[in-house]
Length: 393
Ligand code: FEO
Image 1: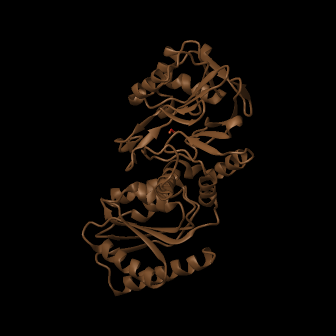
Image 2 (image 1 turned 90 degrees about the horizontal axis):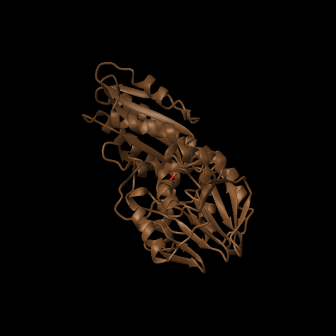
C-alpha cells in the first residue's frame, strides 16, 4: 500500500518478474497492476483490481488498511489484468456495487460471470459522490478496448486512466522520477498496445485535457505528477505528420545473401545521412522493433525465400507491422531466392493494412551482384529523397 494523497492509496501489486504479457508482449522491465482506494467522508471506492495471480497482494493491502466495507468497485477496463480479481473482491465485499459502463458490463459478465444485480451502469460524464470526494466517469473508448474509460477525481485533480498512459515498468517509485526510463517504457507500451488506435486517441486526449489534471494515475507503471510530459509525448506519437529521419531495416538471412544486401543498403543509407535502426529478426526484441515504428519514416523488410515464402521471422515482423499500423510513410522489401517463390505477393498481402507507400520490391537470385548493389544504391537514394520530403527541419 502506498499513499498518494490523504485518503487516496495505491493498493495493487508490482510484478517484478513477469517477462511476457498476453503470451506475446515482452516485459523486459516487469510491470504492475495498480489498483486505487479512495476513501471519501461517506463512502469508499476501489478502482480496478489486479491480475489474478496477484490477488493475495491486493487482499493483504486492503486487510492491512482495515478496509471493512467497499461501497463501489470501479472497473475501467474488462481485460483480466485489471478485472481478474473482481470476483474475489465482490465476494469479499457483498454490498459493493460494481460501477462501469454498459459495454464493459457486458464484457465482465462474459469473462467472469458476474451477476447482473452487482452492477451500477454509468454514462459518460456521470458522477458519484463519496461525500467529500467526487468521481466523474469519462468514456475513453479504444485505449485500448472498446469499453475503456477513465475516472476524474475532481477535488484532488487526479485522472485514473487505466491502460491509457500506462507503462510496463516494475518500480518502487510511486511517481515517475527517472523520466528517461519511464518514457522509454511508456513509448514501448504505446507502440504495443495503443498505436493502432491513435486516431481515436486524438479525441480522448482532447477530452481529458478539458480537466485540470495534477496527477495521472495509470494502471501500469508509476504515476505522473508532471502529467503534461506524458500527454505531450502522446501528442507527438499520434501526430501523423511527424516522423523522424529513421528507417527500420529488419531482416532475416539464412545463408548470407540477404545479409550482404542489407550490409550494402545500410552503408548506402548512412552515407546519405539517413538514420538507420537495424534488427536481425531472428534474435531481435520484437518490442524494441515496435518502439521504433512509432516515429520511423520508413521500414525496409528483408528476407530470404523459405519454402517459397517469407522466412518465418520476417513473416512475424510483417504481421506485427500490419497489425500495429504505424504511421510509417513507406515500406520497402528486399530479398533473395534460390529457385522460385511467391515471396513478393506474400509480402504485399501481409502488409495490406498499411497505408504506407510500398516501394517496388527488390528480389535477387543467389548472391547479390554488381547490378544488384546498384539497385540497392538506387533504393538508398530513393529513401534519402523521401526523408528530405518528409522530415521538417
Ligand atoms: Fe492492462 Fe488492457 O489491460
